[in-house]
Length: 404
Image (cartoon, rainbow, N blue to C red; front, side):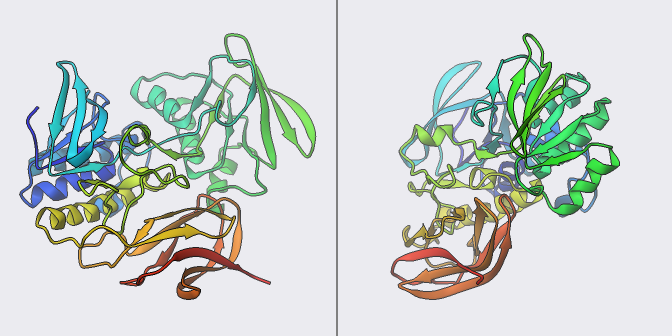
């Protein structure tokens, strides 16, 4: 593997979108992907809708991933699959391994686009036995769409994020009929119209309910639900543990790069630069889950910032460090708020909540509100706040002025 001007780690929509944009502007770009095929999560999603923003047509996930790959290759991008990055080193050097053995590569810029992982059963502290038939939505989609398997017939789905409704579509494709969707909160996490899909499929949504334990020796035989203080036993042959997305940031945690404890992803400035300016990041590594189209667009915008960096046109790193000043706030990206410019990919602050909140979202500098927006949001919903071109010097905090 030869060195490139830019190395992109991860071949989902953000990584391929950025790589294609860079190559179209004359850069030598290599994309590194640990899987056997490039395309990211959409490769596992054998349903609609993908592609309207990028290709102006509705596509199934695998077709969308193939179009992204084809566009990148046509632009001159080199894609290396079955290649794992093992270390990120200062100055744009990385250590990798593939079937030829370990190697060290270097580039003038490295873009991290490694995406997200769903929160596991263990991380959710669900008790009981450890039988087969407990899996994430991503694992389910891989078995159904890539392997043609049907891992169970009557599972329950834990979670109500948009990806949980994607799991419903996957189940329908495979002839699986879920018994219920289980949601611990008082309302679904996805927007309300998504609940109609469950109703049309005859799948009840059980709110304010959680899974306390999973039972079975070799295969799932049932679950214990907790609802309204009561424990209810439900026979089932599978559990889909859906959503709870967190950045896939294992490489960051073993590196010299600064990690944001709030998001679990990297600390970036408005140009997408990390604490080492040779590194950039885009896509769901930054904040948990967003749509494929959003990540593709963000990848392209970050590519333009990388082009500006390679031309020596970016301002020096630095700026005000953002502090979250309200308990309802879970994360905000970017975390370093310096002056913006023409190629700046982040002109809005992307925000996520831990709990529902209403009022006014306020960016405050030295006790004065410099940007604000009405807030009526739920956890995992896309929230944003327009950023001033130059927030100025001084301490910056993000807070919520709650309604009386």
